[in-house]
Length: 541
Image 1 (cartoon, helix red, strand yellow):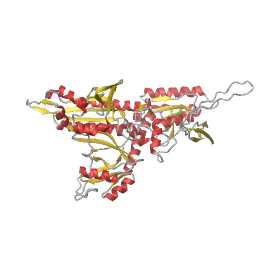
Image 2 (cartoon, rainbow, N blue to C red; image 1 turned 60 degrees about the horizontal axis):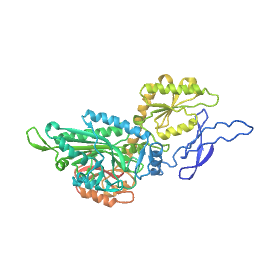
Image 3 (cartoon, helix red, strand yellow; image 1 turned 90 degrees about the horizontal axis):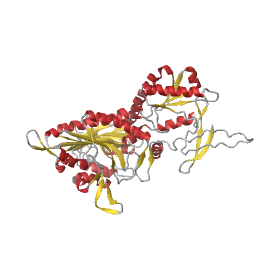
Image 4 (spheres, helix red, strand yellow; image 1 turned 90 degrees about the vertical axis):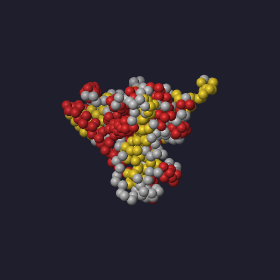
């Protein structure tokens, strides 16, 4: 085993170990490292031609997930998921991450269309008069609103806001379009970007100044219809996380302090990151009640000929979903993608060596990809001849492809392939005759296993407490805390104040819909008053 040295993008001197891969004794090019290094062919003497030397690139993460989570996350994101932009808090979504967003979008868009929701698009800009019409709403978003104040070198007479969300953009037109009960329900959704400017510690996908999302805005004649839709949408969000991203979430109700500004109540799906001990609000489905209808005069004539106000909802999920997935599943080798959202579910890599039938191996790789693609599996072959098989293994592991197929001389001779799972590293030799069925089964197992592993890690972090001392102890241990609470806003504000520190204050995450039994006489952990519910608490992103 030899040692190679080079420098990463910060100029730090790094050392990498180059190991052997498989029994075919294929040299592995670069198991760790960050900066591309190209081996140059030295000039040979005696007038001989220069010998071709393959290009090798150092790969791998410079930090471990458990040792420096922030640096680890940044490095994983930078490997073809995002590119940093020259404006702080803004990121370029590269094709590898954009494909994940598109897969989720395809699922969700089809589901809401079954609910008779129609897509539309409203402008990015908001006039100050409209934005400030709903007082509580604008107060909630005021610090994050970006303003356009100039056109060329001239100051605008009236500054124009860039939407942080679209309630105030859309609802003046709802009042125009809704006149009678036959105009209801009105169900619109838009896929767009929003801008929320003022914040500290920007984090790719999790907290950025501009991000992609969908936002649904619906209006109904009755509260019952609105309430029903809130939960229907929330279930779709649960499915995105658990069925597609393999991330376990809790469905629940937000507290009065944490609900959407100006809304009646907010429901959410909450994820948890064990490595950091922080919750993540995964997506929200709000019942706005009639508050916005009152502000924007969204009235209609009911079947009795009387004037009534509509009941409204709004709901959204964003590219934050991708960040939660990375944090949940990634390891010290890089990203791990659940098969359902991987743009490449299977990568096929030839493993030739000296005197091998290289063309026969390449042909077998191409035929394998064709068979998988015809069966609806997203597969690609990597036939690049300027990288060694070992380098390719590391590269595709970093990118998180769920399943790798290797084909070498022995595989060609035995009419088989070798599969290697990204989630657990398990290797298996399978006959090419049953390849498609076996790969489909493996992808399903990988998806299920990733969810189960994440669920077990999350459950191991849940701690039920009864007292303040137990709460503080659990908080310091980065636990997801389930505590009896009196459901009073002032008590939650007091908990935030008492736990404020360098790592952020604790707050309610949600009160789960599936409530454990609350014995009579149970007291609130923070106030000592009679508890009304169980609520998840913790620090959050």
